[in-house]
Image 1 (tube, rainbow over the protein chains, first blue to last red):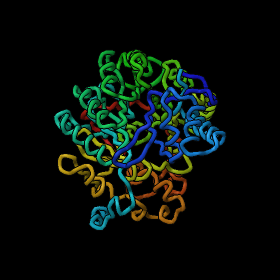
Image 2 (cartoon, rainbow over the protein chains, first blue to last red; image 1 turned 90 degrees about the horizontal axis):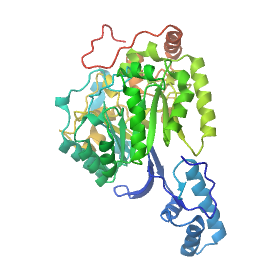
Image 3 (cartoon, each protein chain N blue to C red; image 1 turned 180 degrees about the vertical axis):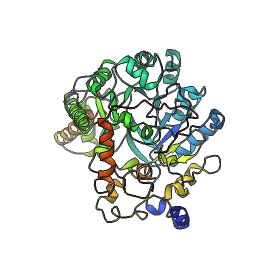
Image 4 (cartoon, rainbow over the protein chains, first blue to last red; image 1 turned 45 degrees about the vertical axis):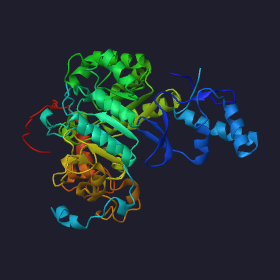
Length: 97
Length: 382
């Protein structure tokens, strides 16, 4: 059991053990799977979550995405934090370590 | 039997714009050492001799993945009675299905859990009948059950499997609701399901023993709402209220034949686990048809898909594609016709009569349980 996580740029996010971020081949879509939960994801969320590996910090994720999409890092960082906070509140993301 | 005559013109899944189902509830066996009087299995339990073989289940799993299903819930009865559970779990995880075991736990041991975890099992849902030891054993009809479950929960966490505590609540344990939540925290569960009894099959026969008063229910809902705020980010609390006291009916299964499949131990494919309580439905079996064919074509699915079948007041209701008319099995059980508006809906003409009767039952002393067993005979149908 972890305490409530507040996502900041230094946090290293990961998926809890019971949460799977998986590509469904038949449907050709990425989803988050958890007990009796299925979360469909928009393309931006998929980009972010593909970088969540329990090693990258939130700041690193935002940095890589800003390079990939040639977008301002501040804006991306805000989006990444917001999305991960939402998923964390629902129990789909936790802090590594 | 009007329903049956009209079947030739039924629209199929694709004609309703319905995609592949999301999840499969696989009842591997109806055998179970417990005898919970609210069991979701049908009153006519399937015997071991009729159960699908390992290879038949593997074929079903292959088909489910090809269709695009995301999750499988290995359930029962008690799924661990099957000695091939390990084979089935391994096959599910090899194929990429999110694999969930729904168990009473009483037949598990640490070695078997460790093995299941190694084979890729992703989650365990462990049922609890109460937090009070003696009452839990009485409800489950299995002495020593509760103590064993507490041990099993520890073993689950020792092999680092995620845990959900499944707690079915009713008038005979609802005063322990806070204890249920605390128990889930103490057992280091990620999630707790607080589900009020749903009244079909066995539970309907025992309704007077289980149905809470409206006051008990309101109190329970307050406790859950507070705990959800206090434990946000620590413990996920799923809560199912008894729809008898709801204003709108539940959108049962997300609509008939829209999202889920249920398979019983002999391979009949059902729109929900209670569908066998609707006597005129004929179910197709995976020994005769592919899962995909059944999802698209089976009359038992197509008969209540969409909104064409609805009578009034559903037909002109602006919630008809939200609630989908509520629950067909409940309509069958309480009104004698599965097409009727689920009486849980406050707009149903039978709502007040049926639910004042249930509320009256809740105020009287609870009767003895009718335990879930093979071959129980009932004197009068409800």
